[in-house]
Amino acid sequence: MMSQYMRSALLFVFTLLTLCSAEAAISVPEGSRIALAFNEPGSNAIASYHGDTFMTPASTQKLLTALAATLYFGPEWQFKTRMLAPQGAIQNGVLNGDLVLQFDGAPDLTREALVNLLAYLKQQKVTQIRGDILLDVSGYGGYDHGDGWSWNDLPVCFTAPASAVIIDRNCVYAQLKADQLGAIAQPIIPAGQPITITSEARIVTQQEYYFGCDLRVDMNSDNNYHLTGCIPQQTGSPWPLSFAITDPTAWGVELVGWAAKHAGLTISGQIKAVRHIPDNMVELAHIPSAPLKKLLDRMLKHSDNLIADSLSRALGHYYLHRAASYAAGADAVRNILKTKAGIDLGSALLADGSGLSAHNLITAKQMLEVLDYMALHDNELHIIGLLPVAGVSGTLGSRGSVQNPPLVKNVTAKTGTLQNVSNLAGFITTASGKRKAFVLMANGLTFPPRIRQELKAHRIASPHYKFERQILEQIYHETPIQITE
Image (cartoon, rainbow, N blue to C red; front, side):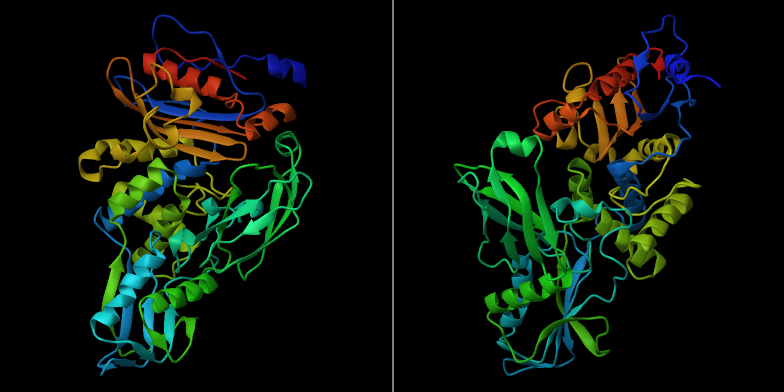
């Protein structure tokens, strides 16, 4: 059997282009798994390295969601949060019966927009609701977090649940007073935030925090948060906190009550969530979301998970006529790409629309097929112009691998980052002026403890950026690539 030493000494030569001279071999980051695919200049041939290996896509999966949503909904489509009431219920300043707010999973709905929606009743001279306010969440089913999401990320706003009820992005802000070393940090909750925070988190030095201690959050279904661990000393402003809502229904009930009060309405009944509403309801008014093209702009430039999963679940609901679940969304994306774009994802595994799930698996060649379709139909889709640009916008605005010439402003791509995962999928304008689609996936990235601590403290750039830059520069120059493992 070949020894470990002999295996590590082998040179795997990957000659992608047939030009005169070859560059020095590029070393894969220690122990990682790399997949690469792009189109060879001047032909339709695909150059690939482990291009058929299933990899964790992370947020590059948003490219699939963006394409499916554009193909099915169209760029002007909007979510709608509707207000319904019984036919003829408004009489003499009173709404007799229940008022229904039908939530559609709009990811940009705010509490102020709810006030504006309810203010329609004031325009009709209504000041009293003689009944309940019912939050209709019947269009959604299943869990509000995706399978395979990291449990310790759930308190963080980038994993806010893409539920039927989304208000203020299902994210809440607070602060920690942390000015005295050794003391317990004290929560500061702004008025109007229907949450509770308790703390046992101890205040430590910056060195202790970044090199061995973390702030931990325990949460329950009532939007209560308990802090343990430690927090670095803040002698100036309090430490900012942001938490993902754990119970969107309870959050919705509280904020609808807040909005009704601010709209000048009194309610004789209750505010509660339901899955069935009376048959005789008619729409009074609705609040639209931003159009799809604007939602996609934010989703792709800033890797917005909430928008991606809201869109995926909405596709499951409207395309498959099923309750909006993560599974339905994944099935819808797969089916839309096959029927409308001819992209068969085969054995690829889709668990959500955002790429947060570690269960997602796709090959570099499959991702390249999505990019090629976008490029071929760019005049109709207009998705490429929504992607981050190296050194200019979004998640590529400050990415260390693409900040300098010749890559800066010449790479337009979606990033994909999870623990031990760092991917890029998009387009590069080469030295000869050609726009080439490429996919570069790095899974299994890890570093020595000291390096991880420096990364946590934001003192260094990720060491793997050197490898990423070398690959992209070779694609830019259209020169042969050699990779050594």
